Length: 163
Image (cartoon, rainbow, N blue to C red):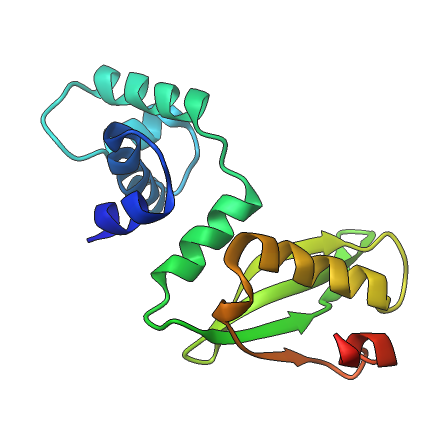
C-alpha cells in the first residue's frame, strides 16, 4: 500500500520508492542513522553489504527535504483535509534559548510538525513570518488540504485574519 501511495506522489524509479519504506522501518528498528547498522535491518535475503550499497545509492540520488517529508505526512493522512496548528514552542537547549514557529498537521489529537522556522529573536512571530510558513505549506500541499487553521493568542493582526 505504501509503495502505491509513494508512486502517486513521487516521480522516482520503483527501486527508490521501495527503498524508502524499508529505510523508515529500519531506522525505527536499529534506532541509529549509521548506514551499516540500518542495513542490518533491511528486509530480504541479500547480503548486508548489498543493503548498505543500496542505501548509499538511495541517499546519493534522493534529497530528503522538509517539503518531501510534508508531502509524505499529508499523503499518509486517512482523509482529504485536516486541521493545521500553528504554534511557537520556546525553551532552552542547554544554555541556549530556542524559539520556533511551527506548522503541524493534527491527527487524533496529536500535532505532527511538518514545517518550522527558527526565530532569531525573543517574542512571537510577526505576520510576515506566519504567512511565509503558510505559503510554504500551500506550495507543497495546496489549500484544499486545509480543513481549519488553529493558532495561539500571539496569532493576531488584520492582515493575518484577512489572509
